[in-house]
Image (cartoon, rainbow, N blue to C red; front, side, top):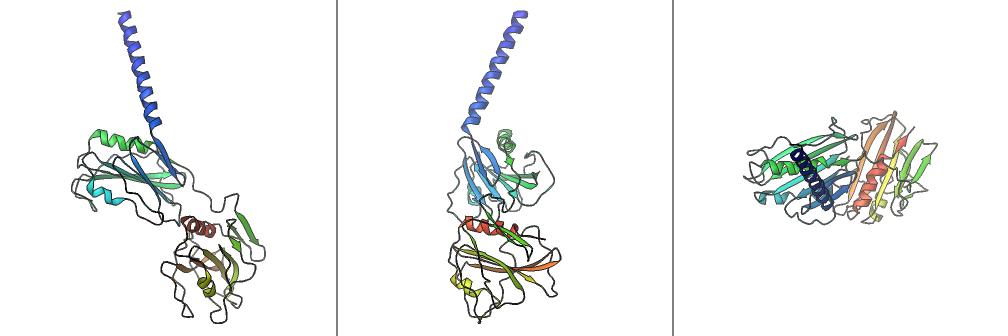
Length: 329
């Protein structure tokens, strides 16, 4: 009896060792894919696709699938949703993303409920889906999985949950915290802003004839000329001269009585309305020109944001980061 027990123990240890070796080998065959502080392990043989949700914000999405995902060019693109309506019976597609806002904490993501049919946006009659989410590190995680069969078996669900268990998320990057960035400080205006080393701060006002609102600081990726008498209150000369890959940010302040909404949690370059033009300037297609007003510490500010139509994702992300590094006292 004792010999049988020893044999059983030895067999159990051997199986445990084989299991550990299999797990280690399987983990070694997987790749950890990361973007903007979000990462997960992609199973061996799976395809992957990473995407910023628009290059204005660090809101990453990572897609993983056991079917091929289409290749993407750079730029603002939607996720590879077109693969969903052709999923084979064993096909799995998983999307995991991180939003900038916070939400109720959840230490781990797990898919427990799968909607088998009849849901809004169902890509094909045979495709089931399920979603989950939760907060971590002050950010909001969300995930959605699609299966190529209405009743995915336990092995398919387990595969998704194994990937979800590998998800890691870092705290959101603090705008302007890159040690290579430079700091501009105007003691009189009580304004601080951080900007990349390849940007510059104008030494002279961009709108020298403008009295109200008062220009505080203008930053850009290239040299631009100031406004002229034909349009002193808008940086139209700068818009005309700005290259298709360049960006410009100008901050102004109202000193007379004015009203504006409180500063939002995040300043976004594409918010606000295109300011009225006082000349016949026609903006090239795709160029962004926005003005937005906000209140901060009892002061009323206006922002002009101009971004060339061919600006890189890096430049567009820098625009958002510069805006959100603005501090007043």
